[in-house]
Length: 147
Image (cartoon, rainbow, N blue to C red; front, side, top):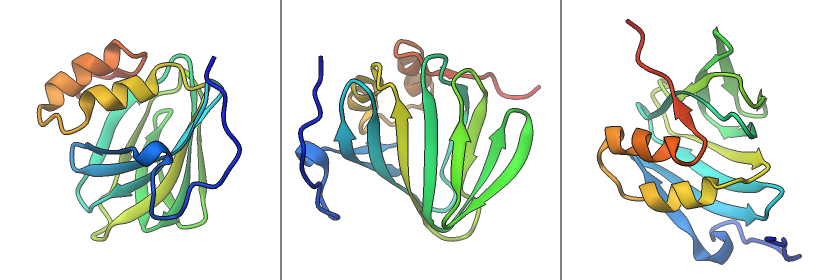
């Protein structure tokens, strides 16, 4: 069991000094336990996470700056600074930054399952198809592109 130690993760640091580069986005780990995992995300303009499903995790985004265009449960939505996005397990969702500026946010999932291991395996991996393949091994299922 992964216990969460008490303490403060400083603003400019990652929990355990962990920072991942995932297809042009920067994810800084802020908290990790068996029950949940949180990370600060920086999405440069034009970056995105294609539609996918977490069958075993609820996922959340608290938008700190910028704007995300979302595809959530078949609907197009927008989330801006101060908004909280709720993405229940089993519901398809995609996250896109087409705002013309960098967007930042705090993401978290509950429970953690093997998401940290997935991020470790796709850190600095330049091939999106390999990212999709590895994601499926960690309970993140990317959807096929629309016809």
